[in-house]
Image (tube, rainbow, N blue to C red):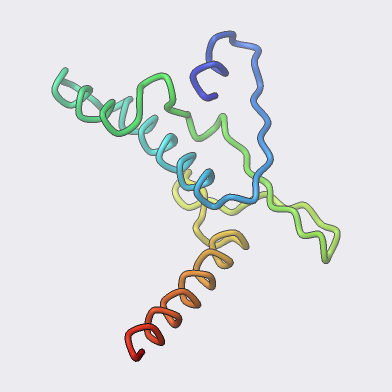
Length: 112
């Protein structure tokens, strides 16, 4: 999707998601876009592209992420840290909670 978005200068990509994984990938794409500007050698470029293809990199100024809170009826921009989407958001907190609950289930399983 990021590659197709870059095909025309006027394109705007709008996504909606409940997935923290998508936000994490966007963070990778932004970081890769930052590093892409600093690369000096083909070896560095190849290393970067094995992680995030050049066509999928994003400039931080071209990305806006909003968090919707249906309980409060509000829409707020997701905080950033040094141009990267912050990990401090509801989706990540829900993912952390789910991971913790799963870890507790594994502990019970180990006792069986």
